[in-house]
Image (cartoon, rainbow, N blue to C red; front, top):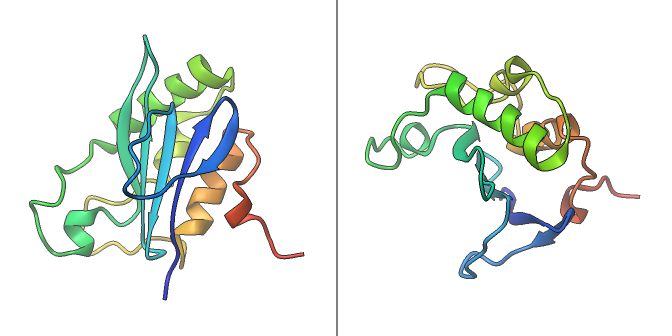
Length: 137
């Protein structure tokens, strides 16, 4: 069985958030069964968006109604801008784009488990990992 976790970056710290709980945070990462991670980012006056790591839901569930295909390049640029605006961290959009889920159903993610991509993304942001993603001692 894969990992099911939902994290929100609130006041610079990660909080684990229940799936039924509404959350308003600049960054929310939702891991679904170690295959899909939904990354939602927002700022009060700047960039916002949503993208996926691992698989896009429409591909994973073989259901085109699950999500609109993501413009990977545009979301990577928006997220890089968000990182600069919200965190003061400069991240190359190309580094972000390589982590994003493919729009092609025939492409497999490079990482076996989406947690690896989530950890890499969080590392690009120069943030600590949420407790649930910390390596076992």
